[in-house]
Length: 202
Image 1 (cartoon, rainbow, N blue to C red):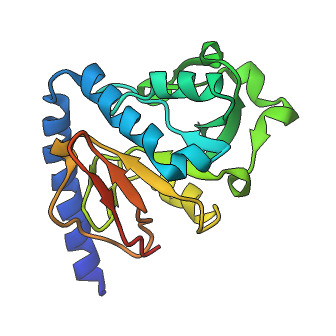
Image 2 (cartoon, rainbow, N blue to C red):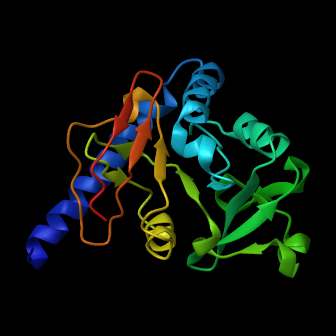
């Protein structure tokens, strides 16, 4: 792909971000639909078999994961959540939802005073399953994020065999997304309507 084609794809992605974000913000009954999506995730064999999961903490118009995290902790899973450190995501072993606090970009992240504890630090190689947010997905597993590449970089440092599962409202699905070389695909995408089992290419 030449420079002009890459720029065209970046422009296409920027337009898609605005379009899908508007659709996601208009999604009705977010809490109820999020609960349905998370319940489907919990029934997947990949999720049931994983002892250590890394999940985003849903905020704003994202698929909400608060109850998923609470149930995973109560069920004995090791629950890992990401937090922003400069230009990268680091991983934190979460024991209780009360350890989360408001952070920049309207996120919920581990309290800063806990992040320095060595027993809370987790490496991507220790995670058996990743639950990933996104603005848009397509049935092949392609994911459109927010443009900072935080999750692409994190997932590239994780074992390729660790399942990557995207959560989305059905309104976030696109027939086909533009894909650049650094984009990391999902193995599975769960919506309230269907579970897409994808051929993840990276």
